[in-house]
Length: 524
Ligand SMILES: Cc1cc2nc3c(=O)[nH]c(=O)nc-3n(C[C@H](O)[C@H](O)[C@H](O)COP(=O)(O)OP(=O)(O)OC[C@H]3O[C@@H](n4cnc5c(N)ncnc54)[C@H](O)[C@@H]3O)c2cc1C
Image 1: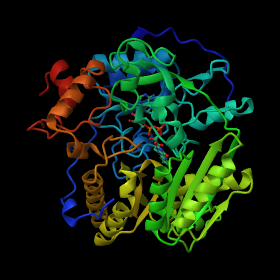
Image 2 (image 1 turned 135 degrees about the vertical axis):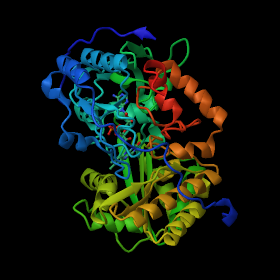
Image 3 (image 1 turned 90 degrees about the horizontal axis):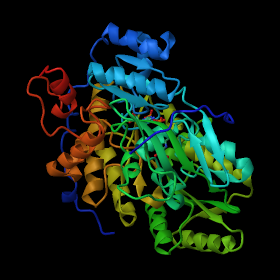
Image 4 (image 1 turned 135 degrees about the horizontal axis):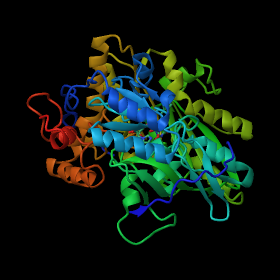
């Protein structure tokens, strides 16, 4: 790890087979990894030191203000922090982290709070680092096709700033108008166009990190590759448990010369799922291949995000191809033929950019549209082999039905990255119990067919107990060893990603979370 150069202010533009019933096990939803509680307050002397570094107004301790930070986009997990620090520079992040490290106080970084795994919320009485003030695009280097940005820069702002020169930042989570590059790096976020262009990790060239000790290091060399271990690769997707990203150099990708977007209508989810498998099997790599089921379509069309989708279908596929104009019509024809061979009722190609953008706007606001259905939304995230889409989706609908719930599926079908969404009323304990039980069964279903417990939203707090579905205790111990290299006292975002291997018999918390206390305070 190289020492980062001092932060300088550069002016920025503002800018398969049938599923056997025995493959699905029913269990109670596993208990989360220890109780989710917050200690009441932060030592006043620590608050005072933090205020001296970032300014009076940039340390929040009022319970009303802290409530804003009690959850991320997955409201089923809630816990307010003891304080929120809002640093305005790399030096301020480093100094504030040092104060907390010296005091043995845990902390967690937070971007826009759009995360869907409970990653950016406080556990163990953590202080939250709100990164919103570090929101400048520091440099755009078209010659080398890179941009250097602060972590609080909103994903879409990079594409908006570079579009006039014919570039964009390719990873496009559906939340891209709100989520930050820091959050994207931490989650290794995906998005509709990551099917062709790759996930966040494929677009990050270097990251400056404030380690949990307060030391600032640079991971990655800004180029394609460099000698030694790929510590940058380790950091991307580490979910805020290795340190705080304070600056990143990202790749800029040229805008494609030509784009064609089509909407294919299906009267059964199975036909739409088979179409997805056949498109990929035909050797075509669309830029995006998204599926929306009937429940999702109707939620969208009943909302202000309506995209003109037909509401009488069981599923829609949005299929986009891009590249050189020459040849795109031929690929589009093959795709339409595959759709029709799989009983598509109709396939329409967006006639212009306005229609294309309208389709995407409606797709990307699907989660928002579900806000009309009920007060809370459980967004699940899992991957499965694409060839098993038809049977797994069938079983997901059956699981929801058995729990007396309605599930809506909208997802990155080309990647086999499912998002079963269940709307519910979080004030009703019985509904919450049923949602958790259904989520548990969906996760077990996906792993039983060779899938994984997350495709892009991360493990965070929500999936922590599911890690044991795919990793042994020994695997998890090795992962802790890696985490220790960055975060030896466990102070940085405790209680996330890696489940407890040992639990404290007095308090029920993961021992791993409390190493900082064991080592620095000798409290347990
Ligand atoms: C409507 C909607 C659509 C979505 N669509 C997608 C999608 O298509 N693809 C996808 O992958 N995700 C999607 N998401 C999930 C979410 O937007 C992403 O995970 C996003 O990357 C989170 O960014 P954020 O800035 O909101 O981070 P937060 O939610 O604030 O934090 C997420 C994690 O990142 C860590 N973190 C934040 N900043 C830093 C930093 N500077 N340094 C180190 N760690 C940090 C936090 O500790 C936390 O663990 C969607 C969410 C919503 C609400």
